Image (tube, rainbow, N blue to C red; front, side, top):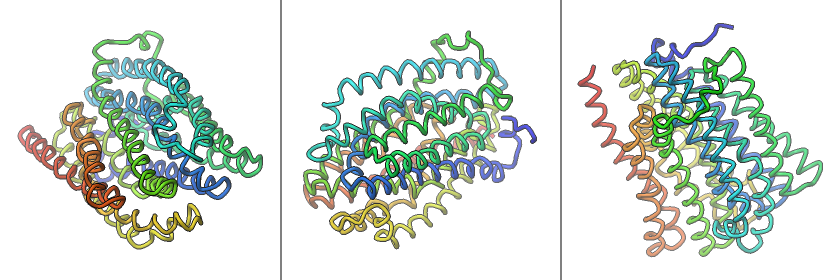
Length: 448
């Protein structure tokens, strides 16, 4: 096998390189999304529709704590990509060591806090009535594995920053496939119910962690660190924190959004509306996998070439990524508009749920074609180390636009106003992103 070097990020043709980076990322996200999708189908059919709502209630908490690992991974990976592009190997190694230390400290601390406040957090996130008990069972087991998940999310981003998309893909495939196998064993064969669903997820990430550990100890990784690299460096921690805060803010806002939407929908339609939102949420990750894949593939290319001051290549990869992602988003839009009834019946046969979900799905995904520019634009600023615009663009979609709309629209339109808020926020956020990205492209033109 020909050894792949990070230097390829600065030399290969952009179109070919983006495909090489994006396809493995897309496959990894697809399988991970299928895992979430099938996991939800298994839970809905083998345990019941209330179990789907219970998992959706738990997601914001575990998602946020796991996002700590992702934030440290994305923030540090931006530094690593640019450092490798500028031939600063020492800085890349020190950054990786600091990422490991920070991940350990933060994920364990927040997992302990999450377990301590379990009875407060679950009702706050919509786990009320019949949803509470299954949500609590799932929540407690999931949090035991959250520190492992944090390492998986951090390590995956570092592997991608090294320009090794296939290994990053494997790191995503392993927990996805493992979770489905464990689901069948723990839920269907052993009849462990919600506990089985939780242990299946936790066990799958432990297997992925072992793979990532093997990767960094093997010859495939360029980042061979020693104990001195684990000592926290103020400047590096500050930069990881600034860039990682963008990702953490995005995930935190996602968690808050889940909390607000779950509670708002529960007030209007009870458990049926919460379950409908759980299904739409699962489809959001699944449907947009190729767009997310292009975004993931785009980040190390943009970061490496920006660090190497190859601004023409930076400009080219921005345009290419937006073009590819927009075409794919348009195709996804058509599928979701035509087949929502068929998609809903994958998850449940509950008549109340199948009646309300399809129309809500159409509304929620109405602005998908414009999202490509918003995702690529916000990812670009994070890739090149510009934390402030990256943070602003990350918060526009949900914090600045969606959450206020969530309170305003139901006043005039009732429950349907909640669903209408999704596409309106998407369009407004894309407009803001276009303004920032246009200014950045003009700056790049002057430096070419």
